[in-house]
Image 1 (tube, chains in turn green, yellow):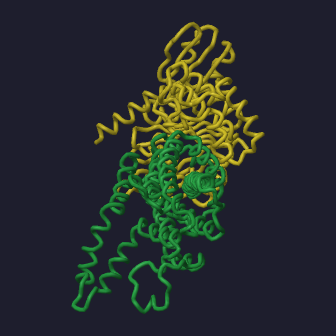
Image 2 (cartoon, chains in turn brown, red):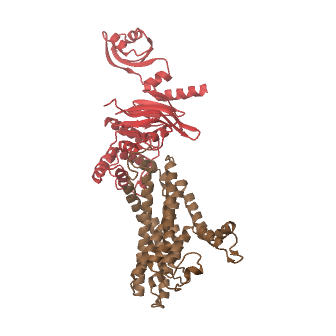
Image 3 (cartoon, helix red, strand yellow):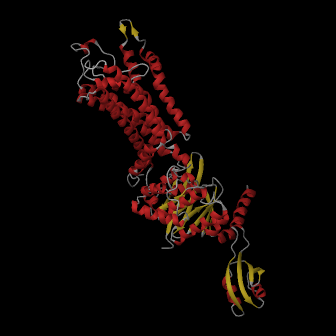
Length: 317
Length: 312
């Protein structure tokens, strides 16, 4: 049966209220402080190292994000680690919190569809995450400007902007997952644990699991005549199920311009190439386009599953 | 327009897997009428309410609320219906105003309308000065009143109140019932679900008794009493004059006359004899009141379920 009225009626109202809640809530401030402190510390440590080598690289600002300085990992490694946690922390009680506060039936008794509530909440959470990441991005560039005394070039800015977009999409995947679990589980603690479980799987165990599965599917890594290409492709495909892999590949290609390929490279592919020479930004974007669309598609897919589950739920508290 | 049916359910049915939660419910509520729905826990009251609001989909049957199908036009229905859920929740970190402004904006009210209606609604529910206070500091009773204020802000043609007095103390309950009566006075149709039979009886024009997902009985309390308690009609008569008791006893169809007080008689009859009694007393007595004695809904409810248990 076709319903009358737009499913988007009320999305703006929900978005405005939820975004205000997120941005003014103590939880968001704590998370932002955590991410900002660690990421800025990593960038600062990288700057100290870069200052000794000014003039050696045309992409100093990119090195600011990629360079690790003991004991701190690089800025991008920290983001890759912390962004899922921030996204899960924002979204794990988005819907079950409404059930538990007993506000869901009150809100849905207003002339809006459930679609609007879920979409408005998700967009608000994504907006809050984006504002946080944008602030961090600007802060890092500001620190770089002050401490290096140099302005980033156009190419660097384009690459860093691409990286920011990829980080938002990466955060969006984990946010959608947190929303899914907040719809599936009535207890927020269970939803948070389930999301953290998936994060642990991809962050720690996925790289252990994929070679085993790849071996089962495509045979051992080494063939009689050298590396087993089938195995390499299978392992890579499995690896790329993880959003962490997709994100790290995007970071690698965008922030290290000399990266010419992501995955196994044959001799025929690098014939004539100047090793270490940077790719133009457009070429790097072409290189990471599948990964970027993969992240966005994963976000939409997981959100769609959450949407279907939510539509089928009874709203009684 | 007083007889206009604003809620009409026909054969409304809801199944959850093998469980039949609501079983072919027929229900009518007219404009400006207060209808109570009663029944034990799990008898299908709240599920019926959710189906009327378009918040859950019926398995069978259809409903019409304010002239719209809740399944096809849920937004139109929800624009016209104010709903107070059985256990109302608010965003504790927000003020009373911000909570109601949020639902007001969702209901499509402008900022000006929200400001104006919010003040009026708070005044009506007896909470005029709490607009800026955080809801976290509110007692249950205040939250319930705030919920009613939300319903009032919407200025609905139908109010659906699910167990609105369940958590209130006796004094607050009486005040709350008074507020429900003012809704009726405004011409709003009210569907009231409650376990408190005396409260339902004191405010409702008609009652629907739910049992096992069905409407087992429906009608005014007097009609239900006649069907469940049996034994004919009971009429209270207030009259002054000579030999009133004897004259009443002489009316054909009168079974028994009891004197309840000076000039106050209770007459058990086989049928509705109000007209005959009035005619009989008119020549020699001054008749100051004649009405059906209000039977106790509590008695009707208890007797009905006792008989069901015995039959089982």
